[in-house]
Length: 186
Length: 186
DNA sequence: AGACCATACATCGATACCGAGGTATCACGG
DNA sequence: CCGTGATACCTCGGTATCGATGTATGGTCT
Image (tube, rainbow over all chains, first blue to last red; front, side, top):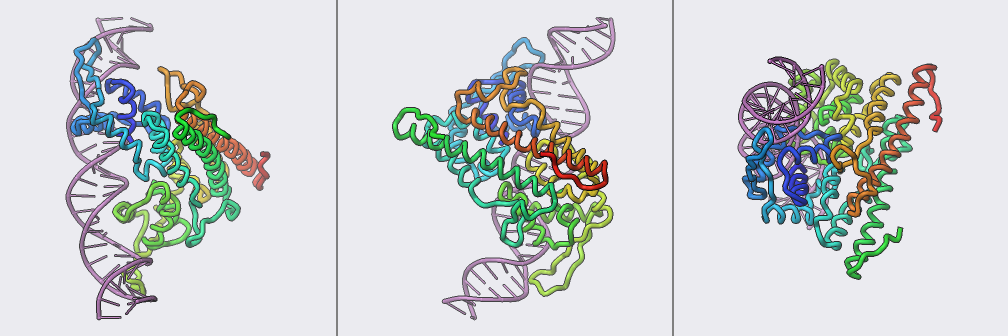
């Protein structure tokens, strides 16, 4: 997820580590902060894999700043990930958020719609957090207000996301067919 | 999070590893599956910490089953975690789900309300995923349908959760004051 | 002049987790 | 009687992440 976020931000424009850090803090920081000890090794890994290059600027700042540029391989890697995300990127809400944040880079409405469809399918599957054998247990079966509330709000949020997904997929697939944009039918 | 889930399930009744595995698969499996290579070492860690004991049953099953029982220390550890969760348990939706699943074990409406309040405060903070310097950028500022949709559905789901939280906190605090249950004022 | 903070980068040990593989037993169908 | 799948447990190597700590410089406040 960190890898995806780094590639996604750098796709727009080169950044140095500290700027990247602040972008990442904005994206996922309030939910799960990224520490320096995670970020800098991650950058090194991406550099070792040839997905980005560091250009040292003997600039005015305190420490020598390394401006990070995506390579062609890096751009390709991002687009490949966006086009064919792993199952975890679809199912885990935190990862899905990251994926969605950069899905616009995938400059192909049909491919974008295909990704949204995967999320749509995932959210459409009957699921609970609690089971009686194989049968999912509904909110109504619980006296416990916490489990009940969890299931009820999960249901509501799933419905909200599904309706957005349906509208957006329809609009994207219409765009893909006609070559022009279409208003969501809502 | 895994630790919390294991303690939470075992608080209800002793289970052997395989049953625990299936409970965990129900709770978080569709979002993020737990592998054997994660579960069994986790059990060993909890045993080494004295939070649970394994009792070997020379039962009829294929492999000798180890029934897992919480110790008093394990029960205390669970209740402590529920009473004073780490910031990550509040902010990360996946962890929060786990926490909420076992919050009923905390047999004190005031303490339960205090935990819900922390989530309420967290969700009330103005937050975006994208920033212009320090200023959070709203959904309306994006032409990108994905970022726009992400922010709009996030707003809707946050509101849904907040209204549930407010109602439930009110009910719990009323219970704590009067000593008896109260209907949510809705 | 000194305190303090933001900027900017880096290392390191500990830990949690994953994935792949391994070892058994039992039940059931072909 | 053999394969397959479910039950049940375990190990090990590799990797990602965390938290603490370190090293600088420049700007601002007092």
